[in-house]
Amino acid sequence: MERLAAFESMLADIQKQSEYERKQMEKLKSEGKEKSATYRQYFGNRMLYKMILEKYREYGLID
Image 1 (cartoon, rainbow, N blue to C red):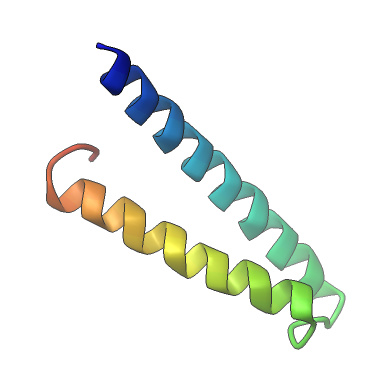
Image 2: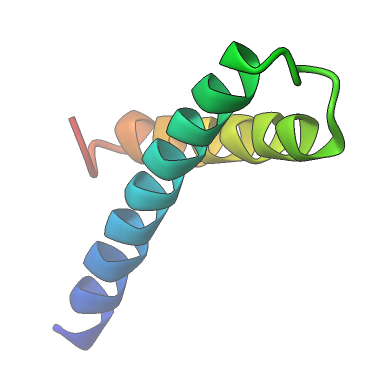
């Protein structure tokens, strides 16, 4: 049961961070800062989150 709780916590954190970074990227983009290091770091992070969440979907762990 502890393992399931850890999984659920990790999943929630990834989803929360992904959403936060998406909003930050939108803000930076509206300011014309798509080439900034921060924007690029968020972009890389979001690709990683996307891959992780896709693996969870692949194994039927999330919808």
